[in-house]
Length: 140
Image 1 (tube, helix red, strand yellow):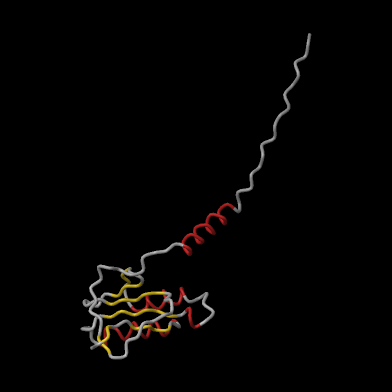
Image 2: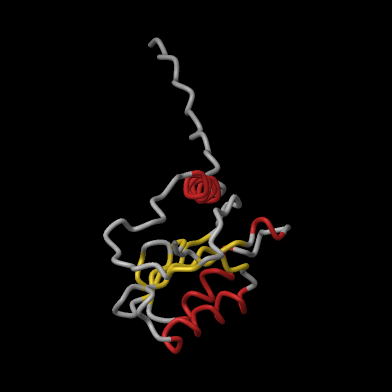
């Protein structure tokens, strides 16, 4: 009787997938950092205060904080609960900054708001290490 040749058993190829999760998260972080998001809400109703000392700012801002006429606080267009959220958000954005040019935070506030409404937000930005750039209109 003739013997049939036996097939060699193939060993399964082991694919290392331990680092795939790391690579996926690095790609997600890369695209989040590189993506351009809309930072300014166009539907936010803010009447800017008037001043004689308004000048155009040439520095880039790391975040935009706005308070509308109802007192709602917005961080880069998304509504937040209070000044503490603003402080932690600005602090998180400023962790990798190395110079003062990278620490500017734009602040918009409705002109009709009393000082008690916007002062805690200004203190939160300052406590986080941000340099406040107030937005206003030039009075004629």
